[in-house]
Length: 173
Image (cartoon, rainbow, N blue to C red; front, side, top):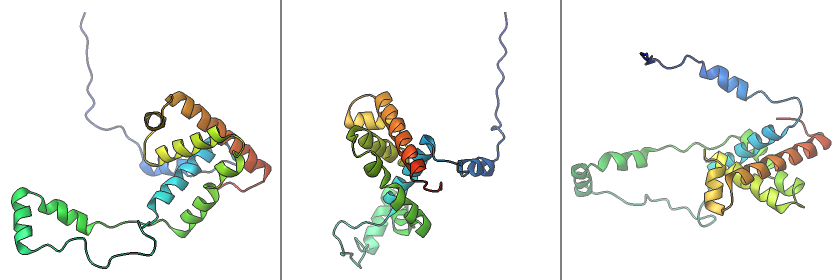
């Protein structure tokens, strides 16, 4: 008996703009998955905000001034391109609307889950993990326990938040 293998070298055809448009459509009423998505976006926005180690302190000088000999030594070691990439990087800051939505959403777990601290912790940690493109396995590795339990508590907490948002008649965004 012969087995024929078919190899596909070309990528699957899809339109990434259609996928992005479908992800951006908000449901008519709040539901758990949409609450989880907004909390993840809020955590991502919070991580993008500029924060200094010491409030109000910001040095005007670069961390290190490179001399000609330093640059030659870096080029010999192959580190010059890495240094130039670090010096030329641009940091994107969130927009005003992103920060406004973040301020609204970041309050939800504390407001709606104040009586269930274990759910509040799970909602916040899993949302943080998703904002860093990780999952509940990462949370379980960091905080202990089982990934399924973290995910279950997160989903239950998001459903409770969604029912509270529906009761408060907060518009879906």
